[in-house]
Image (cartoon, rainbow, N blue to C red):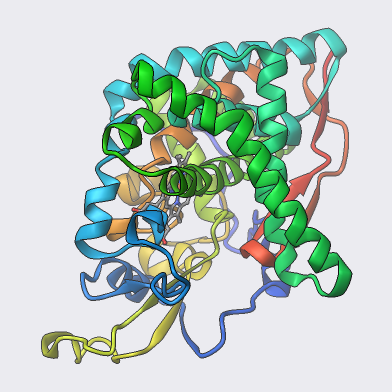
Length: 397
Ligand code: HEM
């Protein structure tokens, strides 16, 4: 990787866009022991004794196969995870996803060239839905109009998460809407794909689940989880990257001049600085083995501050709040820090998220005269403990 040009680093520089917002939203789950230290966060995420701290599926009447992969532990988790990992191998990304990423980037940027303006926070959603939808199977073979309708239905389903902070009639209405939106997505997108794959399997997640005889509810659970984990996160990431690069000419120039590894390093540094997922939770079981008791306390819930871990100077070195283009050379594979988690639940979709962002940015930032024409808005979304970026308008010559 060639050395990338950047202005001299000032030790007080703070390039974060989410620092103030995060302070507003720094609310951890009740009774959580909050962990800020980078090494400790890493060791909890990597410990085989720790469990996901979510609901008790048995208590809410769910069969194990209806629990989304991200909430499982142990063998059940390993068995389910292997259904998707092959879709993220470097070879599969290159051969299957790269042509789709390039084609989608060309199509979206053509809109900017034609209309001379474009909302990045909208195209980032279309990019994310197209790619993760293809992985799942629900957007394959759809034309642009069909794709937009699917994207809208998914957005309706996912944004039902906002109901967690609602009360009264708004909450009652949101609950009814959630059932309706999920049903529409199931009937118009998922079920037709399930039926088609029963006849003719393809290389997508729905085909794999059908082959393994998963029931309708189990298929829907994993599909919804992939939409949430893969689409919402990538949408905010693409908007964040565009915002940073369009504001800093040196960063945009360095990105466009860099080779593939160099571009990846810049994306990793932006995600380290402003991680989309700010907190993860783990629980030490009541029956914690004796040999783990020195390290963890049985029955304790740990709230892991990804943001603090990512900015811990002991792990990332000097100027932790600055974008430092030489950091990748020092940190190597560790450069994204905990932005994608770590250990057995580490995000399997990270190559998909980074490659789609890379191809879209590489195409978009080359448009002559491209510039930011608005002040992006960024809001804390307490329901999902992350932020949402809107109003990222660009124009061009
Ligand atoms: C910039 C975009 C993304 C970010 C910041 C992100 C972040 C994360 C994080 C922090 C975790 C760990 C959760 C935990 O330990 O509890 C995770 C897990 C996961 N992510 Fe991503 N992710 C992104 C994109 C994607 C994409 C594109 C996909 C593909 C569909 C995806 C699929 C998943 C899945 C399936 C899991 C659960 C893995 C498991 O439990 O074994 N993610 N992600």
